[in-house]
Image (cartoon, rainbow, N blue to C red):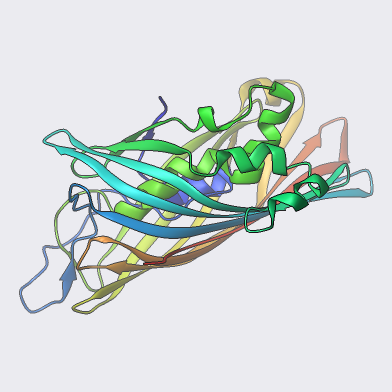
Length: 310
């Protein structure tokens, strides 16, 4: 049962899925004259909502004058239900209603839409792998303030065949699914009101073995609050710390380009996500001290969005 810090946006930058960062901020207390909003969770037992989550990723690998490009996109519609609320937190059941997926790389092209007739499944190698996932569920258990979450059941969505597990995981954005559901309920962990104009920073590290560690720093600002909606704007960057073993082998590794930006529209009446959009870019380059003029690079462009359907 994976346990994750409830910071979806930073995680999405590394995992190519998810939404926005939330962390304990250093803020002045909201005054009575300044509009404010609770950006933490409010769990109501048996409450349900439907969302559409879309992620796209492009990876460009460049080496020795050649480029390899891979594109992956997925759109899932989910029904989320608050199954249980206790003093220890809440358990969310997320059920997959529809799947649209597209994968294109030098070695593979395939796509699938669950809205297409079943009789057309023979034209897609993804169809027999993805259609059985429809109607299946996984759970996300959150602490009362949304600071951490346990995700359970996503591995059970994947086929038993290890050769197909990675393909299906990419096709449904499995690595970021739990984080995406967290982001539907939690924009910033904690229950204190945040005033219009306040901002906060989050720093999160993510391992990128065997190369090193990526540090993602995001800055969020509550730009507007009304009686119904709150708007939060997010920017960020990534830095890289090389693993000692990689450095000892004569490799120099650096992030030469990084950018994160996005916006969340938060429903202050339900304390849940109304919609979000985000974009991120990261280019990692590797050079050998034996051939400093020759480099390899990996550039990843991610876009994600989520919107409530009901």
